[in-house]
Image (cartoon, rainbow, N blue to C red; front, top):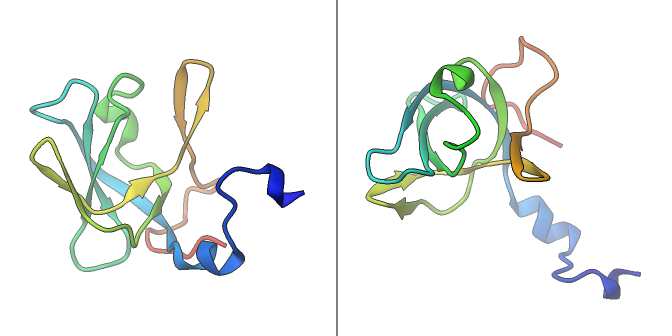
Length: 115
């Protein structure tokens, strides 16, 4: 069955992705890109991480602050329109919308392992 699925990875490949909960502590429109949002997220470390995400069309900053989402925490940092992104949030495409994957409890802190 797996030969019919493009881009199949092994369980060991999947285990290398460090999925974590992340509490959004700040959200701002990217100053140089209409589709991007700059997010500061608490993943349990001393300093928040910055994630640059293409969700500006779907969310206002005030809708994001306080949410606990799921991110890939160990993604190699990348520059997007002059801003460093230190992870990637997980989202689903529903028709022409993008919706964030979030934690189903309000008391989950940033930095929890997702399994």
